Image (tube, rainbow, N blue to C red):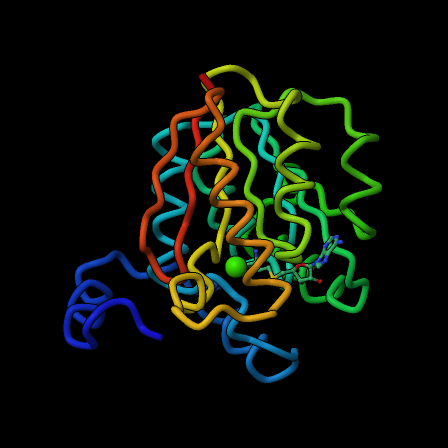
Length: 213
Ligand code: SAH
Ligand code: CA
C-alpha cells in the first residue's frame, strides 16, 4: 500500500533537497548488489532523518539495523563536532559496502559500525543516547525499546521505522503474520507508555517518534 497519492508523493520528492551524490551512488550499488533494496530509507525519508539530525544535533545516536548504511549516513549529517553514531547489523556480508560509503561520506570518525546481533550488543554499550533509531527485525521492536529505554536521556528520542508495515497494520482481516503482530504490539505499548510523548508520522512506511519525558 502506498499511503500518499502518487502525484502528491512525487511533488513532495520534487520539493525536497536532493541527497548528496555518494548517497545516490549507494542507492545504485545497493540495487545492483544487495537483496531487498527496498529496505533502504531512500530520498524523502533520508532527508527527513538528516533534518531531524540537524534539528536535534544529537551527540550520541544508536541505530539498530544498518543495512547498507543509508540511514546512518543521513543521521550523521547533523551531528555536532563531538557527535557519534553507533550502528548495528547482524549481516556481516554488508560490511564492505557500509565501510566504503562511510569513507566516501567522510564520516570515518563519526559512524562506529558493529556487526552482530543487536540483542546481544546493546547491553554491552555503556552510553547515554540522545537518539535511538530502531530499524532492524520487526519481531524484536518492543525488546529493543525496553533494552534501550533506560539508556536514553530524559528529553531524548526513540524513532522506529516501518510501524505501518505497508498498511498491514490496519487490515481488517487479522493476519497471523508475526511481523504485523509484533508491530501492533509495539505501537500499542508506546501509545500507552506514560513515560513518553509520541507521534506516528505516516512518512514512507510510518515512523513512530517518541520523546522520553
Ligand atoms: N536502516 C536501514 C535499513 C535497515 S534494514 C536504512 O534505512 O537504510 C534492516 C536491517 O536489520 C537488515 O540489514 C538486517 O540485517 C538487520 N537486522 C535484522 N535482525 C537484526 C538483529 N537481531 N541485530 C542486528 N541487526 C539486525
Ligand atoms: Ca526501515
